[in-house]
Image (cartoon, rainbow, N blue to C red):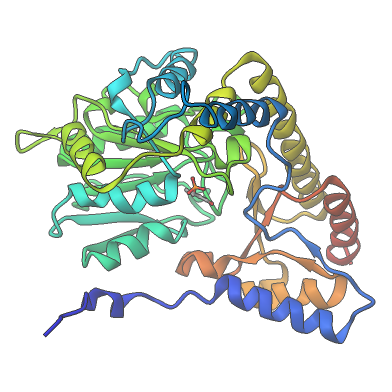
Amino acid sequence: MLKPNLCYQNLAESYLFSTVAKKVSAYQAANPDKPVLRLGIGDVTLPLAPAVIEAMHGAVDEMSKKETFKGYGPEQGYPFLKESIRGYYARRGVALESDEIFISDGAKSDCGNILDLFDKDNVVLVPDPVYPVYVDTNTMAGRKIIYASANKENGFLPMPDASVDADIIYICSPNNPTGASYSKAQLEKWVEYALKKNAVILYDAAYECFVTDGAVRSIYEIENAKKCAIELCSFSKTAGFTGTRCGYTVVPEALEFSGMSLRKMWLRRQTTKFNGVSYIVQKGAAAVFTPEGEKQIAENLAYYRENAKIIADCMDECGVFYTGGKNSPYIWLECPKGMTSWEFFDYLLENIQVVGTPGSGFGKNGEGFFRLTAFGSRETTLEACKRLKTLLKK
Ligand code: PLP
């Protein structure tokens, strides 16, 4: 008789975004004359850059001709895209080998798939609150999860505790949902800890493109990180590929445990279970790194950054504690007057029709906090902030 994976019974049901959607549509039905302003979305809203579109059109045309048609490509990605990514890191002083870079359909899949490389009996250390995928993917695999407490006192940047033994360590910086980003000195401590514990760091750099103040963008900027860290990254937030789907994972040659190379294992895993990202999408992704592409993408990022600054300035003016807003599209704020995350959600919806995301949906420590995002339009952001000021300064 078939035995299902019983670990799925241990998954906490996620009601976060469905409850948000239900509450908003109920409010809208009862108040059709009061449109809501959405600052809850984690998705981008600006279209793909013209350079990306042009490259994709070119690739479609290549597919239409016998001489240039492409069938199966290399599972780990076309060399032209891997070279572009290698150049992107090199410009920031990080030297990678082309075969340490693996192209995928996004960081979410890689977050789940990379776990194929690790035994079930590894202890996983996850910050709380954080992107829920880390917890759910390990729960599905039946791994033991322990939490590093991210809170107001540590600025939502927990540091390693030598008395805690962990084998797989998740770091997301700049963080979703808190927007907090680690400094170089802090990441040095994490690398030191991982090396001491013979652990691996899974470093999620999905928001690295929002770093502006010279802070760390890649874990490999830290000495010896190649001996203990895998980096997951994505074109989703960098270049608006949330619907187009492309990302990459870096698995350094130096990563070896029990005489096994994680890079070779990942190559074996990908060539066995994955058939690569579409040529058209990879052509589009490579255009992100052309001079035109970089310029156009910088304009889009500047637009989101300005939105983030508008929201952060609004919080400053209202005297509300928050993290993020700088180096991040997320503003993570403390709910005023001791409200819970959902109480504050209702308060904003009913009084000023602004929608955000309750922090409690990202972990126990998220209770009493709330996430606003910079991915909305400028108009929406400005109007929402105007209303927030009127309400919160009362
Ligand atoms: N990692 C983090 C921290 C995210 O917030 C997200 C998406 O919101 C992802 C990964 C997923 O990225 P992708 O679109 O490449 O799957």
